Image (cartoon, rainbow, N blue to C red; front, side, top):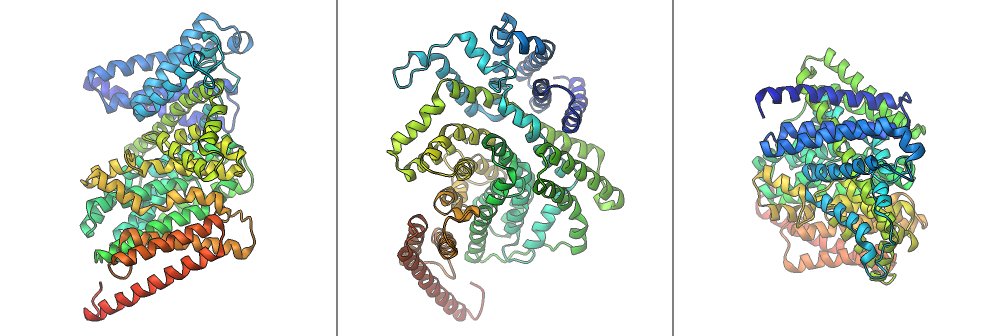
Length: 636
């Protein structure tokens, strides 16, 4: 690509991105066009933004030709559908024209290739398998046979059968067009207008108070930012370039630094109030009020946070790290706080008052922009650079547009799953494999969630599992909120789980660390995340929905904390001093008894586990105190 062409694209991209943002915001207040027209416009804008971004990212001739062809085709398809919209809705839904079929075929092709270019091959391959099964399933033996349906009907179901909630322009793209875009864009605007300055500042303030300072900057800062961005990789890229070198300098190994940043960035997606925007998808798909999802996520987020916090603390003590972060001036932190708290305050207030999500998203963004501009005008050190701010806003639109494309492709996959009957067969398959045993069914569901989450955005992984697995869990008596949260948290965990932990992969590159060691260190740091989904089912008090009296619920909470502390001490091989083998075994046994108490609600298991934990930790305290005396009071 010539420099002139690059400059032209660099000018056109921001114009299109800002136009898309303005259109989306206006649509929340004014019915600019029909819902079907809105979906077509939404995806059309997304195609243009993503393809222009790809041109700037990879200007090589071979890739450039492909992207230009995709861009022109997407523009043509969007224009065709807008012109023919009324005709298709009124006359051609059942009997499509040949041109409709051609456009539908090209649309699916563009989505598959765009998904490959943006998110890698995993989700595109899953999509192709789903489509192939729908088309070729008629040749499969029972019970996997798909009823014979004409290819014309199949193609329309998957692509441009407008107004039916199916295919590309179906219910899932509708969720993106109505509010997913707004809340992902909200994260981009927060980043553009200096919200990350407060987040990192808060992390530095906390880090300055603790001996494990730099790691706490990552934990607090990345977790807070992660709830806004909704992307493990994007979050690591934003904060990891700052926190990882700081952790390495303070004494953490490259693998530990990469792992701490990975689990902190990943954990933000289950942290209220925004929860990485996937919770909005859940609210729309499962028809669960968003406020209920946020409230239910409070304790799980705290438990995950506690697990990582304890890992960081134990690691700092074990490695004798006494790093301090340069403290942040309280006045600066206070002055930076409105850009973060006021928009989130408006968001939470309007949600609690019961306003619609588009309305909430619009006024949250307007508040954010207003506060950002006022802060920039009043404070010299917070003054915004026009070019930098514009680039960050464009990045926010690009991220939201990428999710729009994945939602369009998800519409194809979900329609294929439903139309083929796989949505019924998958739950039955899980039930057959588990023989009706709930723990086994839950384990299978978790594994499926992690496999489908490899290298793809959390919303896509969640939706794929929710379609197939949630009905099975519901039939086995799992409440609807717990079933959906089970799939959601399991899907989030895929980004930190070997063999393909995309978060650990990115963090290890920044840290200059070994990938496998970083991935396993991530598992050690955030192992509670793998237990949380099971707690949703067996200890609903975690979701603030206790199904027993005060005392049994309290015992479950204590048992869960005992599990987290016991296992973290065991995997860290340290408490107040290095553990001997028998002490490690004792902590593992204590955690197993406590876990059994959670699952069975057996008081005997609870008291045995708690007693063993208290005895083991008391013994460690005495050993640590003795070592401290022997070293003349020097820290150990």
